[in-house]
Image (cartoon, rainbow, N blue to C red; front, side):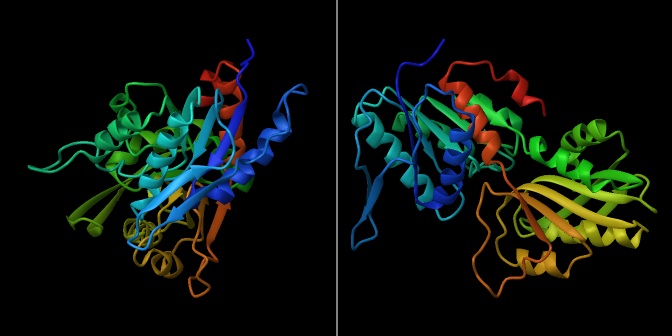
Length: 325
């Protein structure tokens, strides 16, 4: 069955480069009878008090509208996405699909102490209130966040691009490591696909973003280790884990993490760590600050994966085969 409504793709401010690459990938896989795609025209009017207003400068009436935006800090990135969804609905779009390569606030998925918010659920509610009909995202901090939504969620996995990349490294004595107990399931999936052992790093924290100690569980000596995670924030855990693994006799330590949040002293922590390489995706753009050392960081693109899912969803094709973790 072919969708009769035309496809329109737009990007908010923070993800324009990612969106442009997705459009390029879509044009490579579109059906011959489908028109050439382009990134839709939109503007954001800013007021002197900091308020802003997104607007489409072309018609979206009756269209299936895909709006691409990662909601990493600052908070304006989320607000811009919500306002753009609202604008599409009010402009009579038939369907509005929020494509969020990085879903911010995902770490706030439960009440881990008294009197705190559950930010991930609030964001899900805001997306629904704004008028989204569907969400596409990648490597949520916790898979169960999908249950916060009352409409379809397409949850992509970074393993789709990381596993082929790790395989082509041809590392002998390969082991996959989880940086903490919460990442054990993800590490086990990678290890099963790569037919190699798993190492679990058990960490204790004194406070948020500050690791007190890390203990490695598993055979480390002589192994080429790849740490897998969903995101790198301050890189404090990653640095300490890599250093501990090398102290225990690892041959080398690499890391792959889907979302390069890289806040605080993250770049400095990676540069000064025992890590040989760090692989991240382009769901969040790397800094353009020339004073930051990015020599160890390699970017693996998710744009082809997102383009494929967008194409299948638009044309009502099955997508289950794309969601093997």
